[in-house]
Image 1 (tube, rainbow, N blue to C red):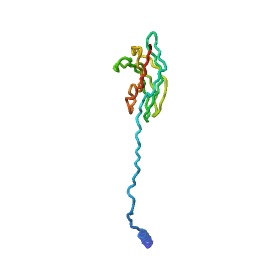
Image 2 (cartoon, rainbow, N blue to C red):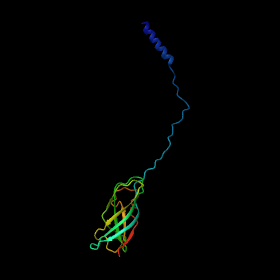
Image 3 (cartoon, rainbow, N blue to C red):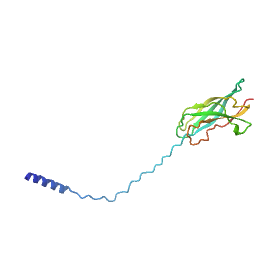
Image 4 (spheres, helix red, strand yellow):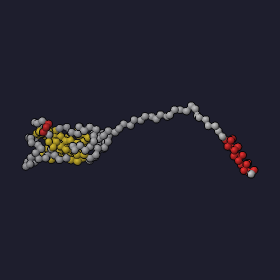
Length: 167
């Protein structure tokens, strides 16, 4: 029994000797403020045809259909990538108003474009029957003609117009 009492007394002594009064610290800094980093949102794709150059215009003597070859510079001025899209040619007789705009040719598919990329390529457009009814017509190309790409600006997809004279 003496041993148990001695061990108990020793434990109580050790606990009493090591006891501490907890104190609340003072003069602590306030809640740290994290720096405000404003990360700008990336802009959506924006497809533009920045240049069009006529390479050739050939007319089939039998069908009277035009085959127009142009060099196009297409740019994605947005920061995000644009998925694959279609380009199409449009024509308008020189002497008429804008209400007679007609599809000139079937569409060409274009591969996806990274943000900020500009590409120059040649395209051949074969006229749809009865698209051009005059010897002179305005011709231009539209990027994303089927409106499948969600762009930051949906109204700047037309190339500059060129006039084609077949006299």
